[in-house]
Length: 357
Image 1 (cartoon, one colour):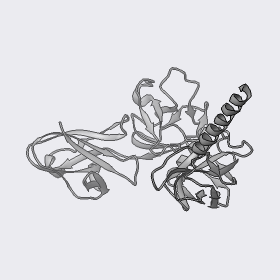
Image 2 (cartoon, helix red, strand yellow):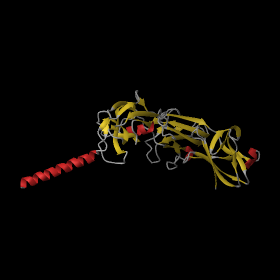
Image 3 (tube, one colour):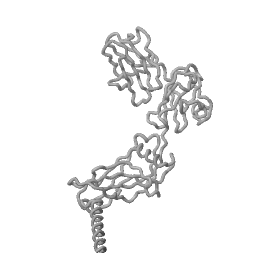
Image 4 (cartoon, helix red, strand yellow):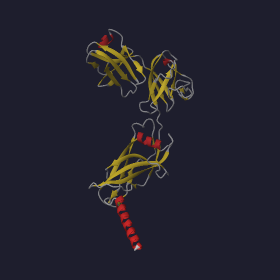
């Protein structure tokens, strides 16, 4: 009797195991009919650099897993170091509820971030593999369940990652009293290692340095012995070409620096008889938001523009916040005090603001 009872318990346990295994597999999926497969990828070694980090993108096309029954599919593209057995693996993008052929568009910035997570060496070719991870989400009747993912065969690729520079470095020098806490930011709009700022030098040969932060440590810096080539943690103080406003461009990728004479930027318009009744309102540079700004007073509705050196040879107008060389007069509808700004950091995207105070 005891043996019979043991047999009944064993059979019941086996039945429960069969049921649970069927439930775990998800019987409504059916068997895998076709494994996922990458069908189109990039064929040449890819190099990510400062010029294509923001604009570059690539596409990878693959077929998802196919089950015997109609099933909604979840798929993602994964990347890992070659020989790592995808441990760890980083996702490059997903195709949700996609069946059949799918294409994932991957920006170079996303790809570069993935390689950073995989601890690849910047500016060195990395041997990598990509694969597709697919599994069923639900059948068309709405049934859901867990099922082990199915993977495509890996495809080998070679990518050279780029190491983005920080968004900001700092200019410190005679022009602001060598003040490490002055926060004179030099901005890299695209995080591509090319930094731009405007500095008003009090005299020719004014000295300054480019620094990574505002801390007290002066050992980390970029100096220059010739005013053109930057030296990491070395070199003499950089000297200005002359006095007055200059546009400074520091490229930390090729360690170069250039200084372009800029001039005095001002606001002109009906507020001063278009320059006939008084000087232009001078604009000063705000390094915290990399914009030139000035406060103007309007006694009525007014029209204004920006110009250099109180001369019409270089002027800017615009429409709807977008500034253009020689553009339309900017309209101010009513009397009041206004903060007006102009951002010249990116020559391909000049913007202005007019805000009532």
